[in-house]
Image (cartoon, rainbow, N blue to C red; front, top):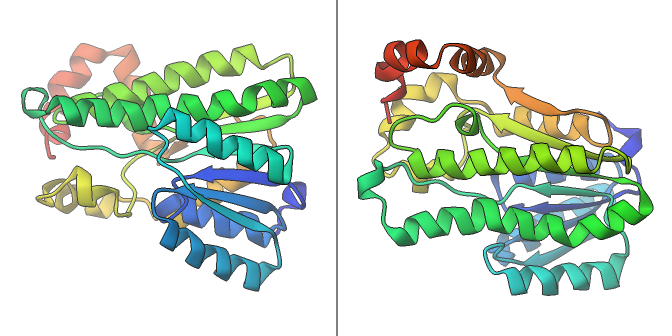
Length: 265
C-alpha cells in the first residue's frame, strides 16, 4: 500500500536494525520516503539500506548510534541535518527491557533501561524539536508499551520507563499543539521480535503469551498509517487496551483479579 503523504519525506527511525523498526522502514520506503536509519548494529543497517535502495530507489542513509550516549546523539543528528536538511518524521523506536523482580534488578540494568528507553528518546526528540517548531511541521512517534499503562509484576523498571515515555509524550503533544507538529504514542502488547531474547532469557513469558503476540509487520503498518495524521495514540491489541481502561477505573479490583495472569513472566 502506497501512502502518498510520505513520498519524498525524510523519516528518521531509531532502533531500525530489526523488529518493528526495520518493518517501518520497509513500508516507508515502499511509499517513496527517504530514510535515515539508526541503530547500534551498523552491519544490519547496511544490509537493510542495500535492500531498500535496490527495491524502491529511495535515499537511505545509515548511522551507528547508541541513543544512551547523548553526545553521540547530538553528533549524529547534526550530521543528518548537514546532509539531508530537515527531518519530517522521527520514530523513536530504540528500547529494551529486562523482566526481573525489583529486588533482583541491578543498578546497571535499571540505568541501562532508563538511559535507552527514556533519556535516549528525549535526546533524539530534543534534536528535532527546534526545527519542527520553527517550520510548524513534523511528526514525532514514540514507541511506548501497554506496560506504560498497566504495570505488571517482574517488569517494574521496564514499566516505569514506559510510564515516563507516556508522560513525556502527552506533555509534548500539548506543547506542540499550536505548531502543527503531531505527537503519537504507540502502545503495543508483546510483539514477536528479538526483544524477548534479552527481556525473557528463560522463555517463560514468551511461552505463556505466545498466542497473543502481535506480528511486527502488523504493528509497523499501524504506525506508518498514522504518519502525518492527527493520531494521538495507537493501542494494540484493542482488547488489551481495554484492560488499561478498567485498571484506571478499578485499580484495586484489577490488581486482585488480574494478579495471577499478570504474573506469568
